[in-house]
Length: 262
Image 1 (cartoon, rainbow, N blue to C red):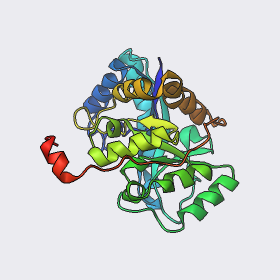
Image 2 (image 1 turned 90 degrees about the vertical axis):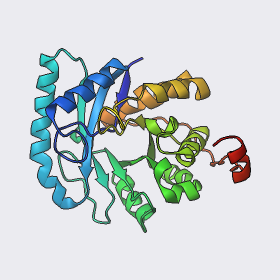
Image 3 (image 1 turned 60 degrees about the vertical axis):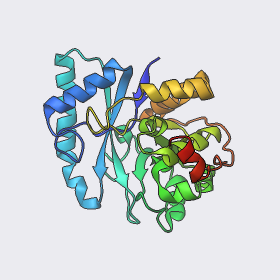
Image 4 (image 1 turned 30 degrees about the vertical axis):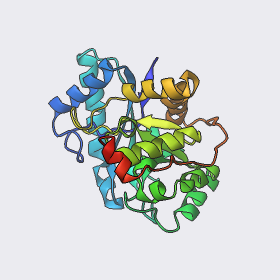
């Protein structure tokens, strides 16, 4: 099945992702070899001033497309950003929304908290026809501690993207269990690699795809890896399942964990 990765840091020397064209090409080829057919490039925009990189990002994005054609690597590219949430966040930039479609944008929170008044800001965006996609909520401490916040976000029109590595345990057991709980509640709408390199954080989503097919079914997996991403890239409306309240697995006592070797 064709799979679309909506979250990656691929272009060289933009942020903490790829640091060279050689690494960039290796990352994309690794994704291609493991079944990814389309990649959205979403470099960090941490503050408004970072949009000064916009022209460089667009130039390198076009350069990468040329390099892929020359290398006969048939991976389709999309362009967006991973916007760090700020109260003055605005989308009046070519790279702020996916493919400059003016609708879907990827936004991340600080890892340790859910920002104050973010519900009101998201409401303003949604009323204006903009659609936030919250990056890796399963890694956010505020959601780990209170996963019903994820349910509230989805109820209000926010979409959620989990990282493939969260399901394979790359970020620890609490993150993995949170990702599972969000999937059980049908609160997940996208899966991305959040790929930064070829080893510790690769552009590989195949393992997560297999886990989701096995545990939640091929239909749901197709929505997460193909149907929803394709519509988001095109700025089209998503049809999503009714969100359900989140139930976290009960945490086992530490003594039992030690006896089991964890």
